[in-house]
Amino acid sequence: MSPGRRSRGGPPVRTPGSPRGAGRARSGSTARSGSTARAAGSAAAGSASARAPGRSTSGADAASGRRSQGRRGLGGDQVEGRRAVRELLAARRRPVRDVWLSDGVTDAAIVGEIVNLAERAGVPVRRVSRARLDAEARTESAQGVLAHARELGEAALDDLLHDAPDGRPPFLLVIDGVTDPHNLGALLRTAELAGASGVVLARHRAAHVTPTVAKAAAGAIEYLPIAVVPGIPAALSQLGDHGIWTVGLDAGADASVFDLDLADQPVALVVGAEGPGLSRLTRARCDVLVAVPQRGRLASLNVAAAGAIAAFEIARRRP
Image 1: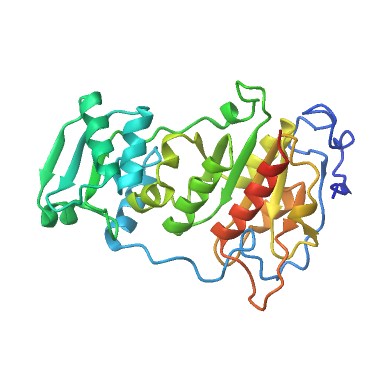
Image 2 (image 1 turned 90 degrees about the vertical axis):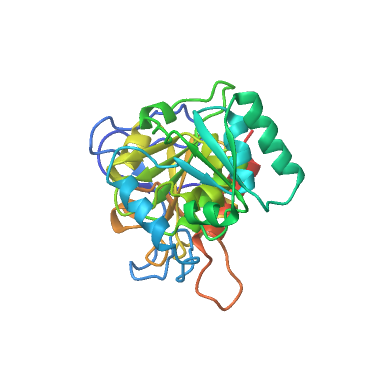
């Protein structure tokens, strides 16, 4: 499926296969291409997300999210869960203050890895009671392990617009208003495993990296550059100015993600919020709107599930 033309003035739109950035206007009025969504009242759930979000966030985690969004930074200063803590220590991309293990934690192989990685990095390992660790934890189950680290730093959006060192074109995941931490964590895990080169989040009215997000992401936050932007629509315009195709996942779109023939180009997959899906302006700024074909009776997929299908379909088509 090739995107249809939707001229907004300026030079002709770029077609797949042409040099990146060709045919893009360098002003606020860019010429873009895209398929038309169905009526605005369609039950799109941000990439075909489900109307019901994942499990509710605990009060402590929600408060942590509000605090992290009130200042510059992504969060991620407390990491919980065995896989997430293991990747925090293995990546060695930010300082780790300490690691807590509960007295009753099982002697699993990954726990031994955590202890070895911490010792090699000179990170103190504290043995605490289960009650003490549970009191410190902000997730439903820390699996007997948590760590305190320096907060994640934000990537600059400009740094995500260029080819990777290995020459591969950008493959970004843009997340428009996802508020459930389990969904955000799952999307970040998907992005890392699908080979995304970066993630774009909105600064306001969206989840950032709370302990629940870090645990659900299972270590992906340690490897993914994440840019936080004032507004998603403006960020999409900036991506377009740099020759990156923006592909919105929308349950009401006529085109199928499995017919997308520009996946090997510089591309950004855009997913929307639980329930309402892509915002009106975000939908309008996307070059192409695609859906995950459905054959059942339910209205839509959960945003994390739909995002995973689309991300790996794009990954399958990339060099």
